[in-house]
Length: 246
Length: 302
Image (cartoon, rainbow over all chains, first blue to last red; front, side, top):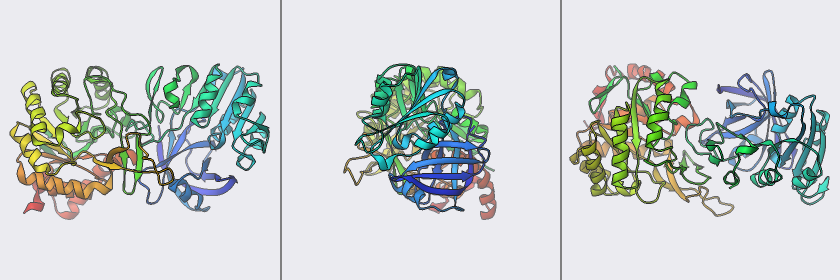
């Protein structure tokens, strides 16, 4: 059950080029799984901004966002002590049950990777390898954090300025895994899905409401029309169709 | 007194979530008891199942938004057989079926299906969807087109028929009057205004259909003006729609001539929007000395 509440900013700091980590305090009981998202109301902007939850603990959550437009630009200018109106507990999130006991790959692309941190915490004790892809060295973040949570981490950059040069799928091809979780831009999800195997993919789409009322974010899956905001944002690899990547 | 009458159907209050902004209703029951609502308007339904338009279907603009969903729905038989029972499990009040089509035959088949095979009390016929080619708004931009759909649906159905009108016309009152003459039991106005948002960096329209339906608080003055104009020309009840966000907006719309209102975009930014308006409406009425909401319908014309 999603809830609405006022959340107080604890920190709001840049962690990579145009990427900010925002820590908030407030009620987090509506968050039940990693991979869920919140919808943020901002001054002077009509629609809320959907941002995925990076990690959460009792009374505190961390969001990571990239400055791409008026909403995220406003967020980047906010200071500790200021408050935000959030709808919390949206979307289905990752289902870790099918991955238990398996050799797991987490695949993250750029600013899409933050939910993998909360997922990694939920997967504590499992064998996990991360493949993270970025454009360039100045875009890299959370490599150390994911390593500290127990994952083997491989970083790829398009220009080769950090880690190995190439796409995240180039690193993934060298890894042994039998279940994957992927979070990132559509082109990356398509490439990961194209490698085959079982897993879950988290999608992004422009949303009207974020809770299933407007059908603004519907995609055609093999299991019928699904709303990215309500039945998603996480879909099983077996239900994802080529239409999902358009 | 909050109850209002719409074409022989009595509503406990005038607050109705607008078609397309409330799913099929049951999705919203997790936020509050939707039995408090005056009625629920279903997502727009065609005879055949439709996926709708490609993404992106949504864009934002100052004071509102654009949508180009494109009448995504599972088709009239599935809505009546599957979605209606899911709504009925959580909602005992008045249901308004919202009917779209690409030809008069489809409008009639869909309307007749809801007339005979559902317990929807009112048929709202949408001749104003701006987001589909052929049909949709095409019928709603001329008095003859709107009247032809209205006449055909009225001849085939027993339940009250409300025609949902487009604001993208030269004179909405002419179209309203033509619908009344064709037998409409009421009117719903306005649907979205045809608008556009362009990404300044790429120079490309944001929504996949390029043009899309503009709604939100910014359109309220247009909606009020059109309800006001139509009220002067017709004697059938009007459901006022467009940019309503607060109980004060409701009282404005009713003063312009609406017998009830629909809340649209505001449900998308605040899932509790209708409930908040329901909480606030009696408070505002008491403050303004309004005892019976029906007594202020059209009072702006005095």
